Every structure is written in C-alpha cells, then in structure tokens.
Length: 261
Ligand SMILES: C[S@@+](CC[C@H](N)C(=O)[O-])C[C@H]1O[C@@H](n2cnc3c(N)ncnc32)[C@H](O)[C@@H]1O
Image (cartoon, rainbow, N blue to C red; front, side):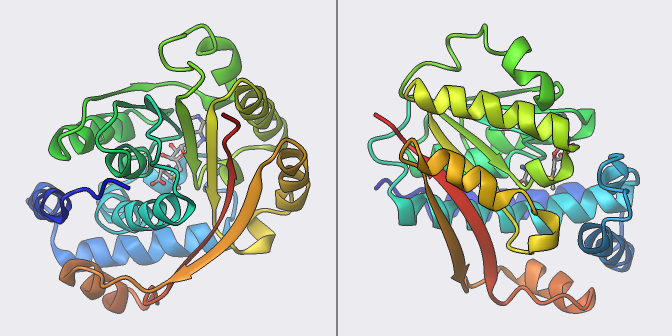
C-alpha cells in the first residue's frame, strides 16, 4: 500500500486554515459548525434542500472540520480494505463536496487522477483547490449525481474497468428515487469491473435503506463493514470539536465495497 506523505496532508491542512480563517473568526466558524452538525443529526429537510452550505460560516465549518474528518475516515477504510492496491486507474467522486474522500483514495493508490462531481459550485471550486494542494491531478465539475448514469456514462475515460468510484456521505442526502438511480449506476459499474466504495454514517435513521443496498451488492461480491478508530486529530480540529460541543475522539462510519476484477 502506498502511503501518502503525511507532509502533504499537513501542508494542505495549514493552507485550509489560512484559506478559511482569513476573514472569519474561530467563534463564527464554531457557531456555524454547531448549526451544521445539528442539521446533519436532525435533518429537518435542510440537508436535502442543500441548505447545509448556504452561509459562508457553514461552508467554512464544512471545509475546515467535516472535510478533513472525511479524508481520515476514507483513508482508514481504503487502507483497511486494501483498496489502493492494485491502484485503480482513476477515482471518480460522486457528490465530492470539497473533494477529500476521492483525494484520500487517490493518494492511498499512489496519486492516481481524481475527478469530482457536485451540485454545489462552491464545493466544486473547493475540490479543485483540494486536489491541487494535495498534489493530485484532478478536475471537478458541477452536476447532479442522480443524472450521473445518463450524463457521465458516456465518458469512457472515467468509467473504464479498473477505475474506481467513491460516494461518501451523499446517498443519505438524496431523495429515494434519486438514490435508487445512483445505486443502479453504481451496481452497473461494479458489474463492469469498476471498484465501488460507498461511505455513510452509522446512524440508522439516516440510512434506513442500507441493509437492502448491502444485500444487493453482496450478491455480486460486495462487502459491508462498520468502522471505529481514533486518529490523532490535528490541533484545529480538536479545538473546533470541543468548542462546538461535539465528540469526534473516535470516528465511526459504515462502508460498502465492491471490487470485481
Ligand atoms: C455531506 S457532503 C459530503 C461531501 C464529500 N463527499 C465528503 O465526504 O466530504 C454531501 C455533498 O453531496 C452534494 N450533493 C447532494 N446531493 C447532490 C446531487 N444530487 N448531485 C450532486 N451533488 C450532491 C452536496 O452538495 C454536498 O457537497
């Protein structure tokens, strides 16, 4: 397994801090982080409407706090599953946000190209920045992942057998019909020899569909796992975690992984 130089990630985190704390103060970001975390937990339909990224504070809180956590979680899962070896030819990140899940897999695979799709233009700009800062060849564009099967299925460069698709913390944000379309697209891709990794929170109320999806992928060799680990978080993340009254000393997630080649 290739291990990305910790320096790349450390330098990215430092750049992230200057980028988002240039004109926002820590207490403002902390307030926004509290609002964001309760929106994720309580839903209140805000997530589906895209309202989680509707203010500068929430965008900064997402980029500075959740996005790095998603990098650590994805890296842990990819390494534990051995999903970086042999390296996929490229990684497509559906609902990439600021790009960290796809970037984590691309780095663990030795720096393969990564591309991201997200409906939010801010996220797309951030993903481009993330890829560049992490030294990855990457591109990101706006798009609706629920239309992915139609609009991107024609791009053979991204969907070659031997490539990979990750979707992290996205399926639970989609309405049922859209999620079903994305799931169909992932299933078809898995059958064509594309590695699939889906990451979601463990909280069952957020993912009532999980067991059915797992059964479907298990039939073609997929595996489901639950993860719990305690990485040494960087100082800024610890500070936000404490200040916002959260508790991320242990990180947890569930994953669905399918690699048929
Ligand atoms: C919780 S964030 C996760 C982002 C990223 N995958 C990560 O792990 O940090 C969910 C992302 O999904 C995006 N999203 C939600 N519905 C989408 C859709 N229909 N098409 C594209 N992106 C979508 C949101 O804009 C947001 O960036």
